[in-house]
Length: 296
Image (cartoon, rainbow, N blue to C red; front, top):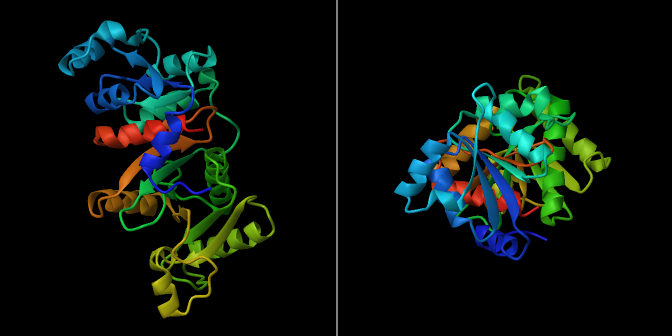
């Protein structure tokens, strides 16, 4: 199974029982707009300063009494409050509101939250690119600064496992580099080659990794043909693995702001999906992120 676009994914989510999204520091206009728009596919719990949240809801033409709101205790981190709701069975997804990503994750990673698993957490951007024939899963764009080989393997495993939950049976991943040859001055090329070897040994079940490979060859079969690059799936990759967070972050933002792509953002590796987008993201991006998280 392959998901072509957000319309296809959203249609599928609306046919499922609604999941509950817990919004951390929910006094965020675009987050609340997304929650309101997504009312036909999710339930929501709005965590934070309930007076501020109610004021924004009124500005959006909503009755605050129609929403489930939770005031954060004065001496408690809002993420810990949200985590407590998840632990109590009152939420399936955590969503970032008017809070910095680092502050959100600080609470999520706190021992008392009980949400962290033992492996590497990673950020995943799901991209709908105008001239590409299916959704692209770009990682890591916001969690792991300079992952080593083992961390890259875990980042891939997080993504593969998530895609399997979406219904993908087999994924094709491009380990992005600036060149296609091994270069001792570019350690990312060695990591890419090793990840390809591991995929052939089935250490990344359900995924084939090609690398090192440049972005143009990964996304265009014609570019691969012209350059004579031998690859079984040029122009047909599902996953783009960035060599570091800087590359992934810049690539994701370039695709959105310069190429007109639609994006959703999640953090994987915790006990529940965490919707993480920029505080400057549009309501549509936040809505798409909710849809992706609710689809598994």
